[in-house]
Length: 139
Image (cartoon, rainbow, N blue to C red; front, side, top):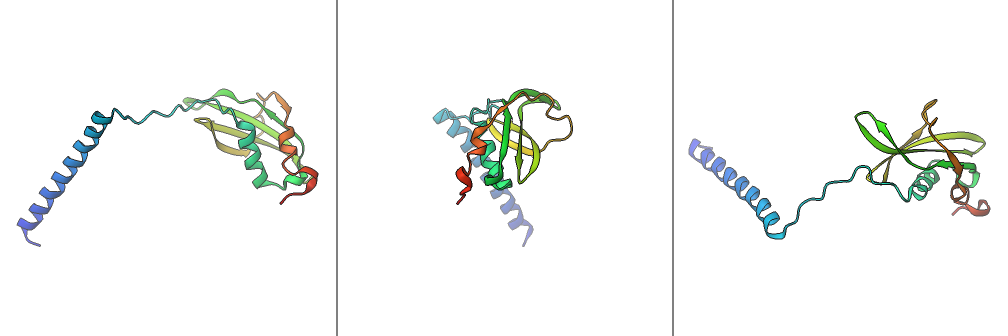
C-alpha cells in the first residue's frame, strides 16, 4: 500500500465517520427522538412474580414451604439507592434466605443473604411461591 492510497483511505474513513455523526444528530433533530434515560429506581411492582420465577429455577418448586417475602424498600447501595428486598423459605428441608436487588423495576441480583443483610425485612406470607407446583405435580 502506497502512502497516497493510505492517505486516501484515512480521508475516506474520516469523511464516513463525520457523515455518520451528522446523520445521528440529524435524525434526532428531524424526529425529535431522544433516548429516554433509564429510571433506575422504578418501583418493582411485580417483584413477587419476578422472584417466584427465579426461585423456581434454583430449587425444586414442589418442596417449597413457609415462604415469606418483604416489600421492596429503597436503600443505599454504595453511592446510589436501589430497591431491595429479601425472601425466605424452606426448600428440600433446607431453610434459605435470599437478598434481591432491583434496577429499573427489574430483578437485577438474587443471592444468598449474608448474615444481617436482611435485618431491614418486614416479612409477610408469600403463598404464590408455595403454589408454584400445586399438589407437587410440576411439569
